[in-house]
Image (cartoon, rainbow, N blue to C red; front, top):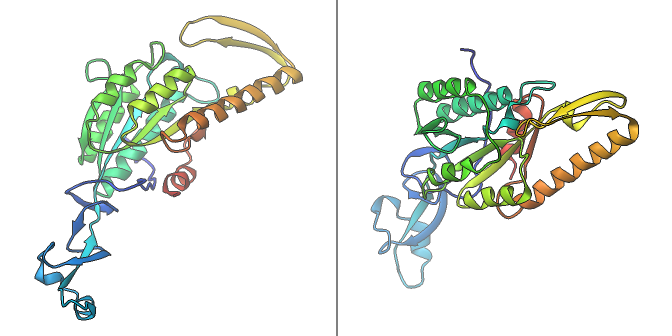
Length: 280
């Protein structure tokens, strides 16, 4: 097994966790970045008494310092395994999805976070690995995922997968080509609304930039229907314009429900993905 690439990420907002780690959290601890000061009677910790704040208090009340505890989080790769994910154009789309999962598994467990992967909606119909700190278990789950044959229609199976995440907030990387109806996309985002959701959109250059001239056979991966098209400059421009509109609609649907979509064309660029994931 080759060593996966390393990527950087930063969760958005604060997460509750009783496990020490690398991220900001809503928990208060004895060490870390100074968060605020509080009356001693509310937080009776003599080790954290703030002498300056105590001496400045006109009522003689004792104050203690409270620190922001750095915590570990749960990171999940939520992978679409519908038939369209099996598209092979310039590259094998599903192989790119697995590369992203491997990078997440390696990077999360390296800094003490737990990594889990869900595909197909449940442990009976796909891959299901609960969040684990074991790098070996995480990478083995990704290898099993690589041998999955994308099949099926739509994204309905993702709803049951969303229920398995539970009620604690998690960082969820939703990996798909998002070739779904707008109503389905909206429903999936709503089902994951509790979590910090990052839509990772896999795009093939043969779809986003078709040739100007030539015969092009297109096939719907989910219905199996085929169509022969004569590509020409005018049709190419309409094709690319529709792709731009699709991206805008996806960004609009994600607004207020998830982060802005990250588009990955053809292959994983770890530096570019990291830049998106650590942006505020």
